[in-house]
Length: 309
Image (cartoon, rainbow, N blue to C red; front, side):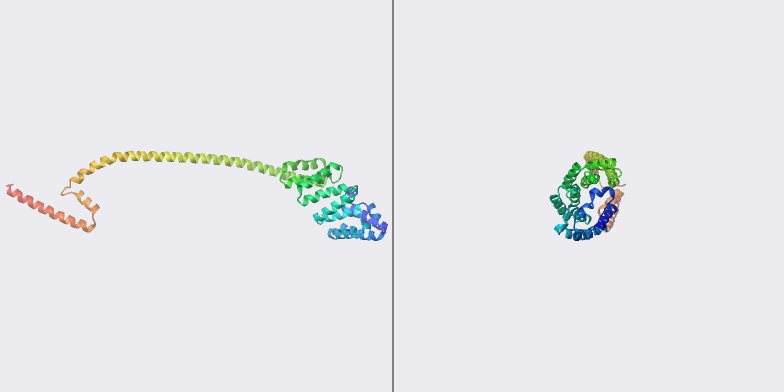
């Protein structure tokens, strides 16, 4: 049984996570062999579930196995934390990680647990706390295989806060110093996104400045146009007032004789009548005028005969 379990755990770790991360990221076989046969079986089921990608079952099985004090070890507890991380149980994983550090502060997995705490805090949205945890991890473990991932998460904390200026150096550090790490590709993508954002910001700034200059020029032009229109209007009014004052006396002088002299036989008389009376009234008045003209002509002929003309 022991030989079978040794082969199972070794195969699981190398297949799932790669030989380079075997010694730091995951539990080595030696932490697994000290258990008795019964506990080996319980933990084996948990490891098998994790290896199969059934992280929810693995979390449940690890937690149930660790309820037995004979099964408790830093390796098994670390895998419980990882199972919680895989299923996104951030609160539960955080509690398990804190318990790990209080129970096994000198464990070889303690640095990785510190990294996982920073990762968990980032996913909980606690970016300030995540920055502190990840910063401590990077300061204490510059040779860790998780160092590039920690740098990337620090950059992500700034990136999600739209602090691109602070995020850029961390992505650049990964690309320059860890080009073969899986986070290098993601860092290049982030740098491209930041460059694109910077170009958009510059373009928006230019458009804003251009727009402000255009609006300022437009407002100045409109003010000038309104001033010219106002000046022209005032000038026309003054001119009209002067002309009206001069023309009013002349018109009155022209109208006086017209009011005093009414020719007896004149077309203007008919026009004046047409403009001031209705059609029926105009007809009656014209008939009366015609009769007066006839009577006046007869009276004039009579006077001429009496005077011997």
